[in-house]
Length: 280
Image 1 (cartoon, rainbow, N blue to C red):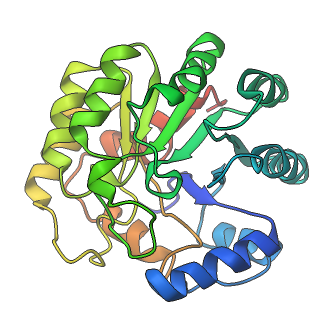
Image 2: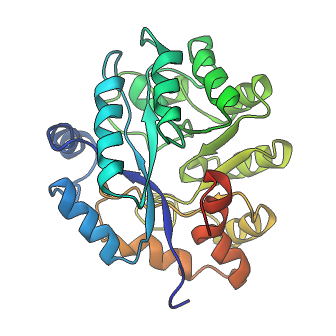
């Protein structure tokens, strides 16, 4: 698949000082992050892996952080036109509508929420103002609400704030919301793909699942079939730089999937172009 265009739909870029705190947390509670470099060096490494465009995610683990992170992301995207910026927000923030309006009016493609980090479930009513703003603006939600990876250090057991049943309740309440569930929902990937049969605005990405890093490998035949069945709603993602292995590991695994070239091209760039309204 030489020369294939690549849009990485799951990349994390934070201010350097925030990155350092995140890497310390991963060192203690998760894994040793391979790429602990200044942000500009991280951009160079990602591009050297063949990525032409990338989504920039960061997230607010407590109220009051979002405006700082969003200001930084907006400035970063201004320097890097290949970046597709997503906003951070916390349901405890005082002016959710105003903050998201400012982000969306300046070109942000959507909102990133990490339920494990914020310790708030996707179907919690405190999330509803965020979803309403996303739907009203026609933007995209990327919400880490699947079953894993479960890491020590989270303030709540992830089963209490995530899972396919809670995603289903969220989508039932907001059935037209364009929503990405990353990591194929991790262990309950069958349940997530089943939910995608019901909700045509529900998307997913492969992030970290195909790397061989997670202790329970997925059924690859099932995944290949599910990706083909939902060919327009599966995205490529790496989770760079917060990964314990080489950035090409997941990329190479995706390229080895038994998929037709048309389906693979959709996963690698075409689906992201349509979802985020990018020029092909």
